[in-house]
Image (cartoon, rainbow, N blue to C red; front, top):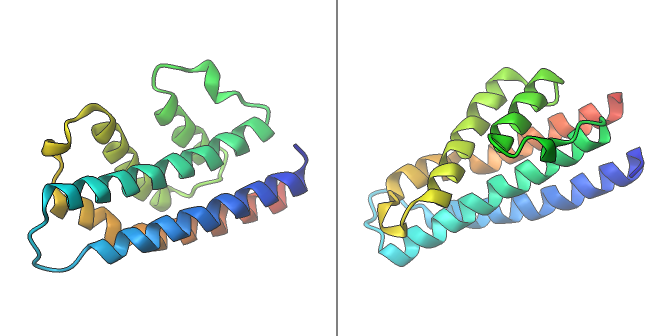
Length: 145
C-alpha cells in the first residue's frame, strides 16, 4: 500500500467511524432508564468504533513496517502504545482512546447483562469528537511520513 492508498483507506474508515459515532450519540438521552437491548446496542456500537480505530492504527503501523500481529498477547495495547510512541496519537488523545480500549476489552469478555448504560453514554458523548480528533492526527501523520 502506498501513501495515497493509505490515506484513502483511512478516509473511508473514518467516514464509517463518524457514522457509527453519530448513531451512538443519538442513543444517549439524559436521565433515561435503558432497556437491556438498548444497552447491548450501545455497547456494540462503541465496540465497533474502537475496532475501527484499531484497524486504522494497525494499518499505519504496517505502513511504518511494524507488524502488530507479531504481538498476540496484549496486541491491542501494543497498537495504541506504538501509535503514541510514533507520534500518531498525542498523549491527551491517547488517554481518551485508552478509555475506549478498556471498554472494548471489557465488552469482549463480559456478559451483556454486565454492561452499564450510563458508563457507555459517558464514552459515547465524547465519541464523535474523539474520532474527529483522531482523523485529524492520522491524516497529519500520513502527510509527514
